[in-house]
Figure 1 (cartoon, rainbow, N blue to C red):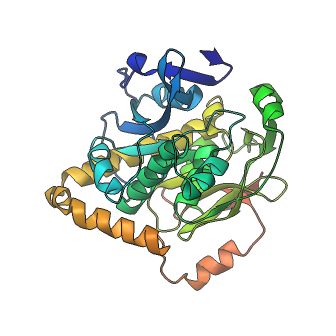
Figure 2: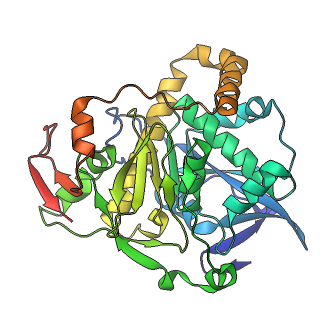
Figure 3: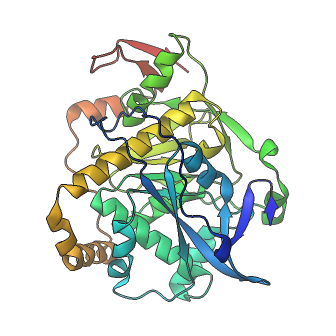
Length: 351
């Protein structure tokens, strides 16, 4: 059953892989551009019981975007099974089977955050799939696996790491009836000194120096009030709200509150997906060179569990250098143009 971008997929009709020609993407997070294989992108999807059997509840556009960018889709059904103290160990085999994690937007008109918070007091069928998705995001982040999170997925990723979603009450029935062409659109302004700005350089150079705006659709009633430790804002909307955030430690991790998957008609959107997939390739290559990581499952998972229980950061946060403090205290939000071979912006183009 499909309405606009929303899709419920019967489990027995689930497709896991896509085979097609591979083009070499460009990447700003990783210097290793020699890896050509199609990365496997894990996409967690809640399972609910429907009138005709189990259904995967998913906004289909994100999975379509991964296939369009010619990676392999690994759908991860999250059944409403109770969580337990060894849940990270239970997720370990999934982590081994994928090269990156994509957290999708949810079904419009639903509020994952309210269900998750209610589940902390009274766990149940509705909250368990979200709890498993949160745990998967925590484990992937701690391991340094590339994470791309979009819309609700970005909110979940930030919350999984200790951040807070903004409280924006609204009429859920009215929001459920809205179509993508009625969503708000915002111009994204990217901080010059950020990994996101670096990743966008191929798209900027392809414009022959002509700055084009980056407009993205935003689903109603979404936002981030407080970023988790280890994350930083890397883009804002015109009203000053956070539009995107990234890991501070240099590993690939990007949360886009705008519908990046609805923006593949723009060079900026495809370039970001390219960067994510190249980071997935690099992660897989690095992991394949380290045989010992498979033997540390219990120790690593126990460490993640301890950090989460104690409310400690999952991303190592070292003391911020004075230069970074200066750069990120500025209200100026720009996209930088960097000449080939240069490590610092030579010209700032305001967007």
